Image 1: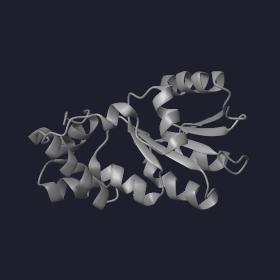
Image 2: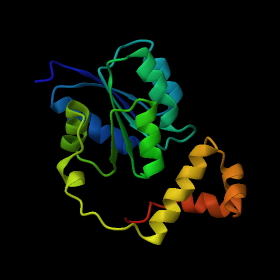
Image 3: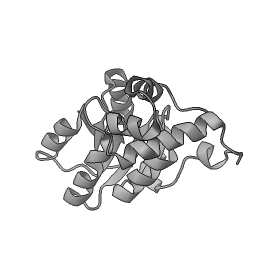
Length: 179
């Protein structure tokens, strides 16, 4: 049993937060929800979470901005980066910044808890067949890497990629291509 461990859930998707929060609370966890990086930082002044589930793509700032802050303030916290926009570049960046694990949405409560508690990938991810990525996937990975190098600056990333800013924004709003 988890002895009422405290989990910080940071995601701007209100319905996802409500659903995951209910599921975690049914399992005995105490969940505090924040919908932005700033909200999460404010909440962490009032309580000490043992675990954190942080979404990568938040409305105003990337969840990557929160990881080093949480790691510095709570060195033993178990952190999971959760996103519907996964790429190798953001996975590596999240781990370098201090996340313990990284999952792509949609992920079940069981997968999220397994990733948090065991620091291991869920079985579905480890059983994936190795195959070369598609050209669309390679493009997505490249865009994510250049965007990370430019610290999320869309205009500069578009200039470096030789594309219009609006084209880049449209590409970023889509889900990543299948591997």
